[in-house]
Length: 426
Image (cartoon, rainbow, N blue to C red; front, side):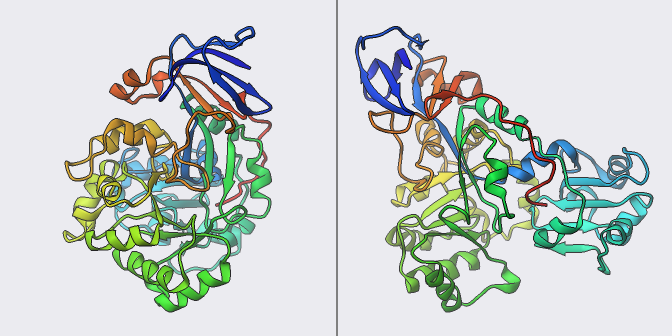
């Protein structure tokens, strides 16, 4: 493939030749007939979403949205849960206590007693089942609240149709050519299930790194976590850190076990300023979600301790401290649109806002080394995002409207194959 007249950062307007899935040459007036006329639009590395949950995102098409932006109050929640036929399973997602308070089995029984219902909390870590769902699945639970029980539920609950076709096409229109699936315990065959997507894939736990999830109630000691990390070596780890204490335990454990190139902090929800030098010294990459303070502003204003609010989802301060930083959408628990994440990173408060080019760079890192920028240069895989306009104009707005085409391995991204019938993660 010969792409004629595109803007390549640092090279100006050039032609780009792709052979065998890689960029073979970049230059002026390369010989041959053009397959694509770039018309002066920017040619970028394809966007890579460094933290996403693909099966959960693909299952949304078969789910009822019951988040704060979808329904309001107990009456609205009940109407959403009763929209289907009596007796049919209802899979509801995105719930937060601001909708209708704490949910448990008795509360769901009062809202929808005539059908099996399961509701996923916005965090993705909690499922709440009503009595009909528990009975049908052969489960016993006084309150119906099942915390991090995806593996068990996967075997007991009915499968959900995955709209991987929709996921792949929507991502291609956004210029996304790669995903890092961040499920902590990937289901058997998950990589095969996701392989129908046209994007390049990295599946944590199957590919490096290995994801480790920390919860405050079961938090290991630093020495205990260091032992777990040593047992995983020589593979890098990606540690889920959403509280101050989780981050501190992780940093102590990595110091004890010894850091490895490719180690990551997932989310970095609360990063106290005094930890920045230690993060830099360890060389660990923070893969964060700068859109969450905007998407969840109302909840964070009441639920996050005042001492933690200045330290939420750092971006600029990480970069200025020399800490590698990248971003993932965390979809479906946040927007699936990387351009919306970039705009949120630019719109952050003065201490954490990024320049537009730096915000774009959050999604241009190498899949296995998210803090290491990729470039359009000879010899690299031809995972590319072609824009309608020069980069300067695209940075002014940071919207997917600028995306003209996406290529993975030099091939235009098209729809994936038939979606499997069952869900890879509950």
